[in-house]
Length: 150
Image 1 (cartoon, rainbow, N blue to C red):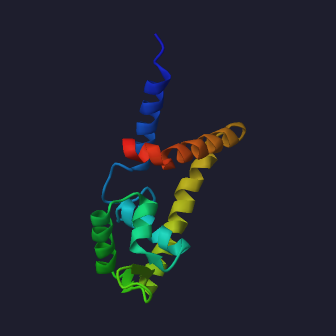
Image 2 (image 1 turned 180 degrees about the vertical axis):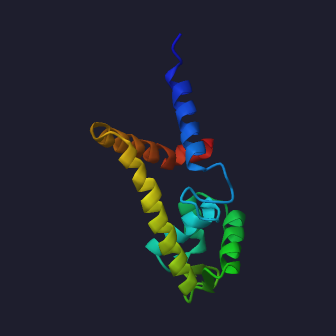
């Protein structure tokens, strides 16, 4: 008897999670010895600086206390600094330090090499289908109603 689509999908997704090492808390899929949350935060800051700490939490789908701990860890590494916004002292703005800029660039380069290299192992005639499916999956998991289920 053939497995239902839901079961096949779940097994495939979990295989991808394990294959990329997403279940390991001590390194990113790119092989950096930092958490995935730290890597995601550094990439997000590269795209938009300065960034309010609250906006980083929303972008990463993390609660306030988790973001605060994450930013404290990044500060401890010397990668990020926090400053109060001039217009509202309750708003903490995040910026990468010079070391943080270097680290985020290294993380992005490694990500592009490793994750981009996955496409090299997919037959040319299937690549567009895989990319389109990943975009659909990304849209679904970014949808607000999904975040409340997880």
